[in-house]
Image 1: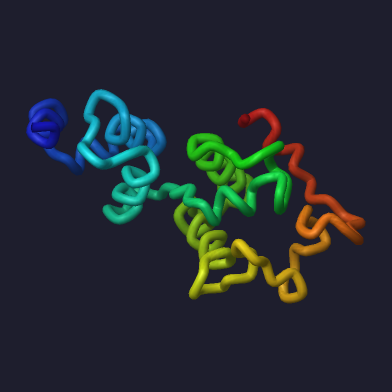
Image 2: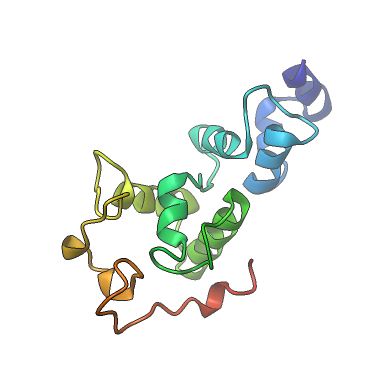
Length: 152
């Protein structure tokens, strides 16, 4: 049993989840040495957040707003790992809790919540529309994403 292995090595599951970065622990739980059945990287990050670890969970909404289709932090839709790295760097730059930044981004995009930058965005309500690639007309400004280039 994976949980028993973790307890034997770390003394407790709590000790394990604080033994390394959220990214590293999520990789171990999602596809690494402590792989849990039916748990991948993103779901492992969600678990870590639910037990109080400051982490991002890069779901479809967060990856979409970071992509070239919206704010253009990536040349395409980022991988989960790249999105986590970027959100972590952004949170560090603005001295913000990673979970808070991730939640704020998700709420801004998610159906039945902010729903501003969802699959069908409400650009007329968005304060970021001047910086966005959607739709690709009448855009005069661009976000300065230079601080993120060394991450991915």
